[in-house]
Amino acid sequence: MVLNDSSFIGKQAGMVFSFYSFFHLFFSQAIARLFPFC
Image (cartoon, rainbow, N blue to C red):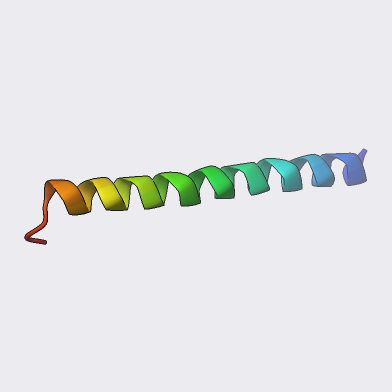
């Protein structure tokens, strides 16, 4: 049970990290286009 939960949490953390990196890149480019003076 503990090993199964840890692997599940690891998969969830990987998905969250991938989504976070994708949205961070997307929003950074969107902000750069909306506010080029920054």
